[in-house]
Length: 212
Image (cartoon, rainbow, N blue to C red; front, side, top):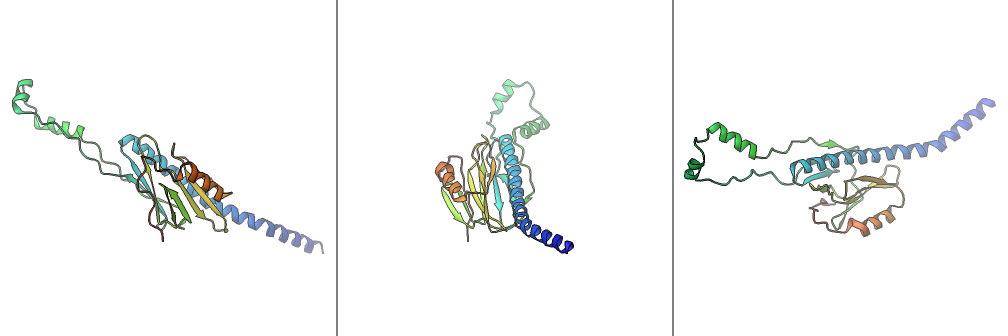
């Protein structure tokens, strides 16, 4: 009888704990996505500052990965042509081919590094994404542009949870901070749209991929 009572108590305790445990495990995937997105945006911000050109982060939900790279290819710096007479008058000796090649190499900016894609935990499309004055349902790709000034394109991304509850990731324009919201998502989305989500910042670029 005592053993039966203990088993009944353990069963009731397990039944009460399992829903909370499943919710905790579901949130772990979203927290992991937030951490990965934070790291990718920080890397893009650093590269944008170093290269002096905007970088773009593409969050591909169908493939479950983040890709980042410069928004436009780098162009070599143009050199001002100098006449042979002027060069001869100013320089007692003509520059050797090796010296000219060294100067060209120094004036040409380095190519942007090739950065492999970063995997995301899961490949479920968001319910919606709000950025650059648009709201897209079930976007396949969400792209965020980071400027050399450290400015980031704001975004509000609502993700479906495996336990039936949603969560949202917000990207702030200053510092590229990523935060996760789990309560009052409709109110959080309304605040985001009112504050910055529907604005069209001058550093923004094409941000949201096509939905279904």
